[in-house]
Amino acid sequence: MIIRRFLLSLFGLYALGSFAQTSAVADGSVVTLEQCREMALSNNKNLRKSAQQIKVAGYEKDQAFAAYLPAIDFAGGYMYNQKGVSVFGSDQLLPVKTFNIEKQDYEFGLVKNPVTGEPVLVNGKPIPEQMAYLPKEALSYDIHNVFFGAVTLTQPIFMGGKIVAMNKITGYAENLARAMHDNAAQDVVYAVDAAYWQVVSLKAKHKLAVSFVNLLDTLSRNVSLMVEQGVATKRDQLTVDVKLNSAQVDLTKVENGLVLSRMALAQVCGLPVHTMLTLADEDAETISATAPIAKSYNMQDVYSAREDLRALELGVKIYKEKENIARASMMPNLALVGAYTFSNPNMFNGFEKKFSGMFSVGAMLTVPIWHWGGNYNKVRAAKAQTVAARLELDNAKDMIDLQVNQASFKAQEAVKTFNMTEANLEKADENLRCAEVGFRDGVMTVDNVMEAQTAWLKAHSENVDARIDVYLCDVYLNKVLGRLDVSTPAFE
Image 1 (cartoon, rainbow, N blue to C red):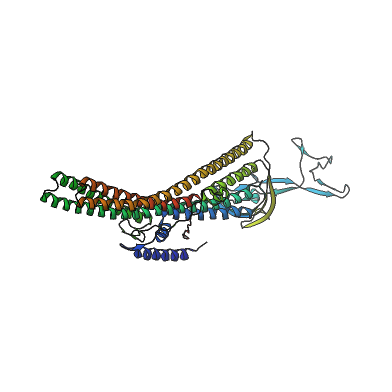
Image 2 (cartoon, rainbow, N blue to C red):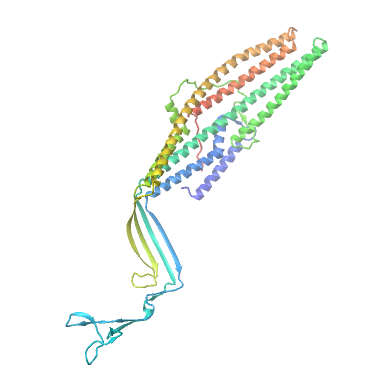
């Protein structure tokens, strides 16, 4: 266990590191996706909480192991008694025997009549010749102040398998906490990626919106000149202006959405929400290649890589060990017991007003005989819980099969969609160029140009969405396959 001073020093170093990291990503700093992941994993409070739960599970594991070892306990106390103790209620006279040489035995000496030589009787009873006087105070004891204590040692020998089962459960529980922590880390990474690519998407759409406004603004100026020359109508001017105003409103919405998406990314990374991050990929014009997408997968490898499924498997093992604990209540328990007891006053050598004690060693055996089926029903309930956990595991495997296939198809579809939108870009650009040339030559109307501009905007917008969707589908596919690379920091 880390001592308090060392823990405080580590906390101070972590605080300094966090401050330096936060300072390094001030407003306008350029950050990569990997840096955003690292910040989110370091600052996420849920991950820090699950890291503490791993510690709790580790401490409980050590606690369970301690049950193998002998337990040493001390108990002591003090008691004040109002009264003392007296063996006799009053002074006592006891007859005394003398040795008779002729009879070779002890006998009571009796008072005899000097004339007849017969024992003198009083109330029909003979009178002893000699009496021993015992005063009441001789057997009166002062117990007003009593001190007592005991040091006991208990060594379990056989507890029906309960201790072994508890050690296995706590070991499984520690692994379960780690699996849940890793699974939560993957969720954090996926959330960071979604927020990161949302910013990239909105930044690209912001550029498109600006370009679209510029196109409409140019068209508006050209139509205005044509209206002055009488080759265009006022209706044409109003149509273009309405479209321009609508595009400017859309531009404002995109700008606001971009600011909010940057705030959301900062929040996921554990930074102040007003930290405006500049992303390394937000101005990229091309998409980097992703790993080839397979059409089928070895599900056994997927099962072994999924942390959430591993957690369910550990849960089945835990319930199985709970069966053993329940069964232990039907088996005998044997323990070795040793003790040293002492008191003041003590009666080990007469009545003495001082501390004295003694050792004692023994064994304690408990054998359950009849509990009206209570323990047996406890075992049956534990078995039912194990069956339920196993069914939940099987159902999760079925859901993972479906999840993997859906993610694979979606990723393949995203790649196909992106390739098609890439092909549509050249067509949209050429269509817009032809419309603008035709408008200048007077063979196309304002409506034709705006239709071409709208088609151009749609094609580029769909290309942006498809490009981002490829990234997100690839990340999600790796997540469901259990391949998402997550390196969580060591929290203190």
